[in-house]
Image (cartoon, rainbow over the protein chains, first blue to last red):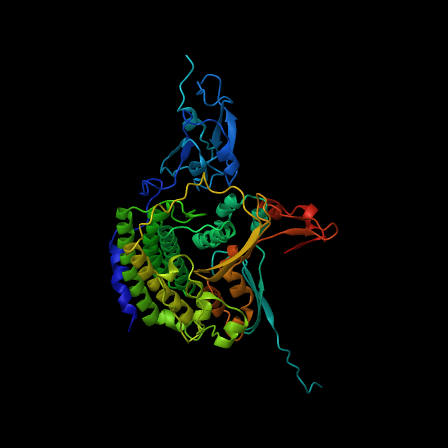
Length: 131
Length: 406
């Protein structure tokens, strides 16, 4: 009979630890190069809008930098790409088309949640306040 | 006084689906049964229309690469590969050997996990849930290998005009090879389980027998046709990408039943593992496979291209037409699932209701591949796509008689 062949595997599974990862209590290990949350470094960004034009998911909106933050001179229009992570498909097209390599990439993936999730805080955090 | 009794044969119509017919995808098999025996099946599709072909016409060539990847999650690299090769034909570009090899690695990894998935689903359909869990656990290794190669488990977004979007380091190539070797061992084991286990063989053998002549007559493709003895494989006949050097062995079986189709998939997964290992061992080093996406041509010359690829489910073809503008004039997708599911209603006849999900799962349907919708107004001739949210709301404006779904 062929059926008992599976028995060792079944017994091993019964006695061993479960394979299921208890996310979000236990983090899943991902690669360092995993395509996770990314945002624009506004010190490099010139506000050229190329990423917003090229985004296949239409997830990037060019937004005004608030007046209390110091925008670089290379960004005369004072706009920056605000990524809506709820819309984003993480294809990294914006990262590869950026002429100034302004995007910071991470392998962070835990972005599910009920609140609006955008790159606003992360991007604006790269700028300094006007003194 | 009654001296005669008239017995009328009763045929009952049983809807199988559209919610979870065998797989977790919406398709309706309207089965007419006489007792337990299925006498006729109508395949109703259209529950998953998204208007992807029209969407491609409304977006630029480069944006379409990422939209095309979302036609089907399971086989996204083959979809993008065939589309990207069509664009390369229009532009007259040729990626280097390393890029071609890396494309093959991505596509073969995808074939392994796709075949493992449908075999796991088949185990679940026949009521063997332990095997389902076991195969899915080992499938995670392939997903990890794909994550190392492309940067994501499922949505690879790996192909780009002129090459691939990220290079593979030697250390990572070694890690992928190690994972694939582990998976190959498990594939051999599962193949033996499918050969020997009584639950599997009793439910699959002799069910949904497809003759060779029927497979050809109804243009069935991929493992379905190969399970019936048809030697058809676009990788061998077209030799696209690096398949001119990494020639796969075409797995053909003669039985033609559901079991043969699943066995073809196990053998193919093993062949794919061999291809991945041999591709990784002799990755060419003729420069970077990653094109600078900022310097790729923005303008496409007028022209057209017709390309095909061997997807895990069979031959997938794309027709792309450019009229010299920013967006493609037409993108026509012909997926293997479409011919395999719509043309195979005859396969179910004569079998019992319990065999119906088994036969459907043995065809490896990918419903999202099949469905692309355009709304046409018959009075004005105006064509437009309708968002899925609007379709589900049941908006009165489009529910009138003036529209039909293509």
